[in-house]
Image 1 (cartoon, rainbow, N blue to C red):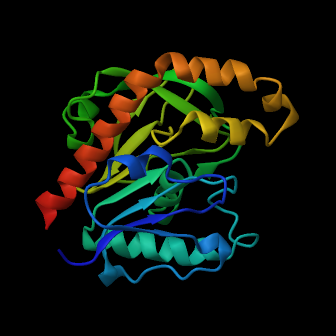
Image 2 (image 1 turned 120 degrees about the horizontal axis):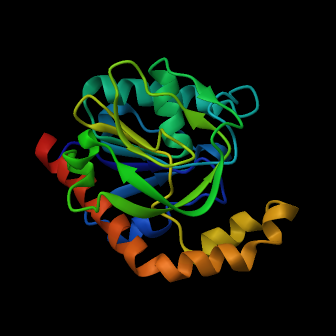
Length: 229
């Protein structure tokens, strides 16, 4: 295998979470927010880009985002498998010319997402129910890039997942979260501090199904890496 899986963590409080539990191939977690260099394209067999409290257009406040966008652009152009989660999906949309809009279609907590007709046959969603439970935490949302395929929607946020080409996906929701991560995020703001136990309880009620779905996402994504080797 040429290179290995690289996971980009953009924020100290937005880690890969349960993604790491299911990995069966070598991987490296890169932390550009603390000055670590991003990998070169030729070092990458697949790329997962996590979320973050910043926005996809906050390059001036977080200069590493410009370099990360260039890397995403190169990875997608080369056909290297890519999975973007929340901010990672927004960055994918942005580098492909789509808008990322602040304070639109905001969602918080455990919410259902439904697959589109295209999503029902997409290999990332293979084995996943047509309607499934997700954990949402976003203020911004992405438009679908030209040539992209909408794969999933929710009542509040119609753009939940998309694919570009055969091997690049963006997810608005968070398959990686754990109870610990949710508690950390709730501490960010007074309004969410007050909802901590509610949000955690909602997640815990769905955790078994949630974990199964998250494992299936990761398995399907890793299968795409094997297919394209």
